[in-house]
Length: 574
Image 1 (cartoon, rainbow, N blue to C red):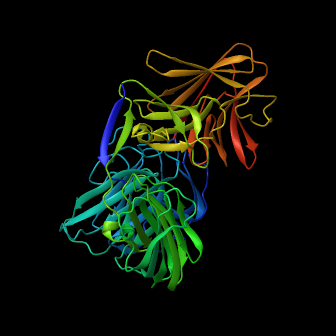
Image 2 (image 1 turned 60 degrees about the vertical axis):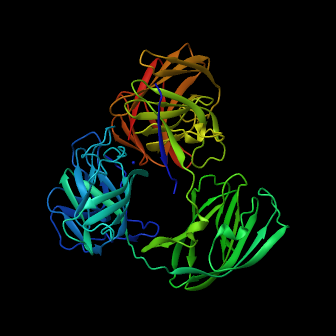
Image 3 (image 1 turned 45 degrees about the vertical axis):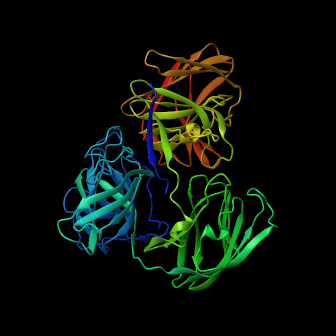
């Protein structure tokens, strides 16, 4: 039975892969990890390494490579940074050993839990991301895969004494907590950031922070505007309605016109040099922002005040800018522009009335209950311009989900956690007909999963000689997709369990050639132990130790392929 959860809300990878060094990220200031000098005092249970690897299904010790860039901890004393923070943003990558548990400790002694609980579907106080409140879903990865954590935190809330506020916490790109108020025993001005390991071994890298201030180093000056009455979708602008000077950025200078193109020009006065992120929030057909003649943001339709961002490096002083905005005649106009940089809170460059409160837009989801759910839709993968049109997504009550491109016999994507966001399919006209995964997604190759090859060195044939024959449901409602290939019929069945997705192929008939299955592709594929492979930092493939899987080069990357005949199976997990 399909369950529709409608919530009205405003849109406002043993990893044998050793990673060397530490990279800075965006506007975050990196915490140096050449040694332990960035911390208050050394502790015997902490060290800095350049390589770190863990077997995800073994209790063997982690393999360390001496060097710099990775902070490694075991149970014992916590380690405290010399950086003292109040309100901050924090970004960190971490890897856990099987059974590990530890904390990132924020000012005010607020502890964010990180733990080995990647296989579970339910959330509780042992789920990664827990801080005073259960995460809305389990977005943790398996041991041996690097994970990412980002958060925005206010160590003090002026309107609520003795309280801190977690504004947002994302785990592996999935938002798991928002706007959580946390009690403080004592008021906090600034305190250090700490790390603690209670069980197992945990590694940290790419630790970056922003100490947030409320100053405003950018203002808009010398604003002029022109309003054209050409149709909303016009590509030329000739009908000048009116023009003038302005003291602030607002769409209200259009005086309620139903169709218009609004152009602003002026100066950006920057009192501090740096990389600035400009974010537009608008509702309309067109928005573009140019600074010093270079395009920073150029987007198309925005029907629900979506956010679009661009980054530009500004020197101290004045910079010319130009802005173009066009509204939809059937929706109210809405125009906003926000700016931020390292250490600066985002703030608005528009007046409040220029960005009216948006109409509530429902979040429509499909949630499997007792049996799997299947949804036909279009799918648009990252990096692809065209939609995949013959797709079916299958969600399981166990929380392991996937999408198949039926026309190519291709596994397109797999994810764990909540199943499907179908808002763009079922809300209003649902014109995009796009389904979006609602949990922790791992990219897969998107190529056909099956091919007939002359030998194990022949290039992979994507979607060659594959015909979809339909699917059959078993007694539990699990589909088995059937394909005709090479004169044989293959049944492809994916079953969700407690620790991953087990995929089984059954070959019927006598194929005209050798049939292979593509188990994974990426920049690097590593044999962790016999029968266990890691695909980049994305997921693991586990199969019978006697199976004849092969790692082979493919362009600039690698592929993991397996000859199949009779009944063949493997499991993927992350």
